[in-house]
Length: 301
Image (cartoon, one colour):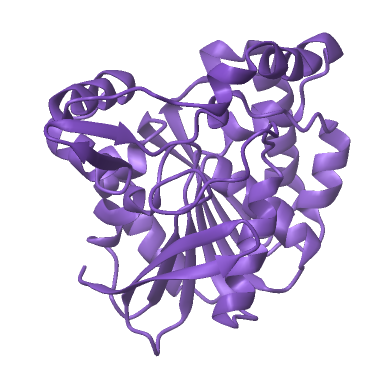
């Protein structure tokens, strides 16, 4: 799908990079990426969707071509909700469809709780791993993030690592199980040339150690079930559940309750990894397209 425009929005701490595709007169769709990603993560999926819609994505602070948050402070997942609000206000949208991946999907659920009615539909791509960090009940584990950040302050607030392009590609391929072509797309907005054969990754290192939000399952249920727009909740079969066995039980129960009680909440299980929408977009594209086009919501007994 041909890129329509790329621009920057000035905010208090710097600039946020935006990019758009499709028909500017079409129904608006906001796309929000996950942790250590960028707007480029949606490119393979967009190629399989109708260009009748007006798609806008942006790079979160500390990702891609957006400026990072001010150095010195630990980061939390809730900060992204504020950025979403900034972008929506900039676009002047009052009604739009929301597509989010991982942390971007979780942030969309909280944005909807703050501004009910703005989002008319939500397509959430493998959200479970982001929700694992909402329900950490061991306060020692919760506190350890802050302890680690300030104990290793210099490590997280500076980054002098230099890569060759091939080295950066291999790192992404290895970490995320991608082909070289796919890694090229991921790095298209996250790799900056700083010298002859030398490159720097643009991801903020603090994104590796985001502070958990530590909300109870009951609290999340109340937030997510109230004023809920139609939601297509896509679950990848081979995500990160093995690393969060305790939290998975809690999140599974939360999502099951939403599926049972909320009339317009639809779960779709697909074969694939956490990046299935990117690595195998054909496995979700037909479902996404039909969901975008449908007007009705399902009823539950």
